Every structure is written in structure tokens, then in C-alpha cells.
Length: 67
Image 1: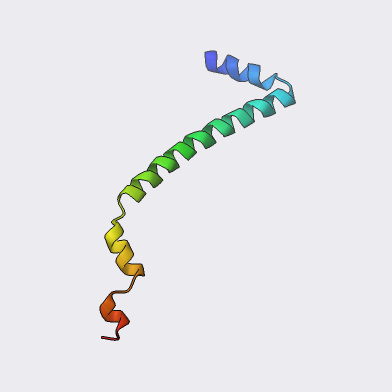
Image 2: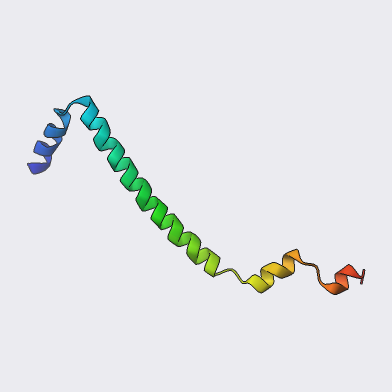
């Protein structure tokens, strides 16, 4: 019953207050998603092997001499 009462209270609020509540919820979810994305990106960057990555972009001396 408490949820129904809470929903009725929300429905009876003025439109401007409903919009503020909606934007606060959207911002909170956005921050949560940003934190998850940041942690995922940090883990991906930690997993990169720089020596292999550098070999892909910097040609070896043998390839430069045409061999």
C-alpha cells in the first residue's frame, strides 16, 4: 500500500516538481553509468600490452631495409 500512496503523491505534484524529480533521477543514473564506464575503460587500458601495440605501429628495422 505504501507504494500506491507514494505514486499518488507523485501524481498530485505540480508539473514543475515532476520534471525536477525526473531530471534528478536521470542525472543519478547517468553518473552511475559513467562510473561503470570509467571502471571498464580503466581495466581495458590496464590489459593492453604496450610492447605488442608498439610493434604494430613502429615497423622493425628489417622491414625498413626492404628485407
